[in-house]
Every structure is written in structure tokens, then in C-alpha cells.
Length: 288
Image 1 (cartoon, rainbow, N blue to C red):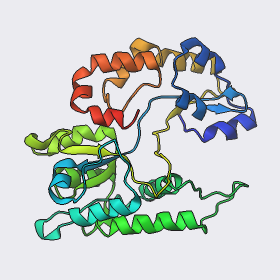
Image 2 (cartoon, rainbow, N blue to C red; image 1 turned 120 degrees about the vertical axis):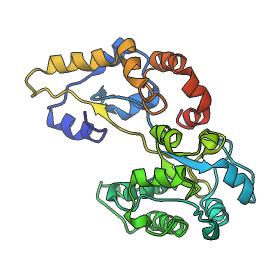
Image 3 (tube, one colour; image 1 turned 60 degrees about the vertical axis):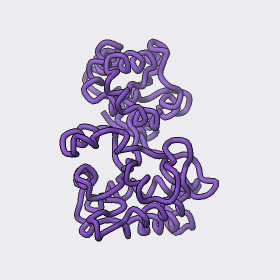
Image 4 (cartoon, helix red, strand yellow; image 1 turned 135 degrees about the vertical axis):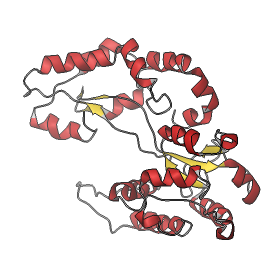
């Protein structure tokens, strides 16, 4: 299992098997997933699931403290509006801060910066593929990250991803950038009377004016290497695990996180785990 950016590198090296026949065999992979696995006329990878980074916000606290309507999934806030909301949610005298960021691990710092860069239509690579951090969009995204950090509880620089979920579930902060698998954490640690989507809501991630929709996907992809001991067996494994019955059996272990890349499997998963999808419907909708 690898990641999308492996495709071009290993395809150009000639060591990655073309998987076009798997896509023909299943015939129902979502187009946006197919696009991510496509390179120079062929499919070189098969994504395992759809799972997207989401912005989780205490809806009840928003309605109590923020002087604008709850945006939900109907309207995307601008960066400025989001920072205003964080101002109003940050109430240290009540032991409440607006947001928690995972400042301990470089990976999480980077992902919380590259998403704003993308939403502003920018990149930290130039046209020749060279790193270019000295451009206006990257600088503005860094400033946006720093402005959000002003609304974090003390010590945020030493907290990791799971620590942010702890801050949210135990009512120390009003918002985090998280993942759907965090539902289990909320159910375990939040007060039972608030452990639902009416309290832990989701909104579209903010963007600058005229910004674009942008998120990251949990890009774990199956790759088959032609220089391996038995590449044909590897391809059979990818086919086996993505057969509907096998696929749904795996995905139902964390249904809102492990969303199938195949339409038929997605439909059956939503039937098998109907209670989860009903109780956390907005957490599904924001990803699809």
C-alpha cells in the first residue's frame, strides 16, 4: 500500500503494473478517484477508500456565541469570517478556546497549511516542479495558520492529532480539523447528552474570497510492482479485497471513515451501517 504520488515516479521507472483491467472489471469506481490514479493514459493504482479531512465545530457553542448563522454545508466561510467566529468562540475565562491545532507533528502542521494554499488556488511548487515557498499565496496561508493558532489553548505546539480530539470531546475547544474516525472518540469521551452531530457539527473549510473547494483525501493506494516475486498474485489480491462482499466487510468496521471507492459497495455499506450514516449524516455528506 502506498500513496498517489508514487504513481508517476514508479510508472516512469517501469516497475509499476498497469491496472486498467481492474477498473474495467469493477466498472463503478468514482470518477474523482479514477482521476487521481490516472497517469499517462493508464491506471497505476487502486485507492483503498474515500476518507477526507473535515472541519468539526461545536454547533451548539456556535449558536450561543457566534454572531452569524450556522453555515453548515450550505455556505463556505471566508478566512476572515472564520477568524471572526474563532474570536467569538474563544472564551478563556470559561475555559474555552476556539480551535486546537496539532502543533507537535510536522505532518499535521503541513497539512493544515497546504489545504489553505490549495483553497486559494496556489501551490508551493513552481511550474518546473521546484519548491517555491516565497510566493504571496503560501505566505497568506502561513499567516492564516498563525491567526488560527492565536485561538488555541496554551501548549498547542506540543499536542498531536489525537490530543486535538481529546480537547474537542472534553469541551476545551470549539473546533478542530479532524477525520471521520473521530466519531468513536467523541462517543467514548464526550458527555452522552452531546455526543451527536447536533453538537459536533461539520462545516465547509473556509477559503479566501473566490477561493476553491479543496480538501485532502486519505490517499492509501494499492500498487502492484512488476519486479516483485509474484505480481499477478498481487493484482489478484487487489481484486479480491475490492470484491463487494469483502470490501464492505472491511469498510463497516469504521463506516464513516472507510468509504468505498466503488458505487455499489458504497450503497451496500450505507444499508449495512444505516444507523451510523443516519446519526452522522452530515459527516458523510461533507465528504461526498
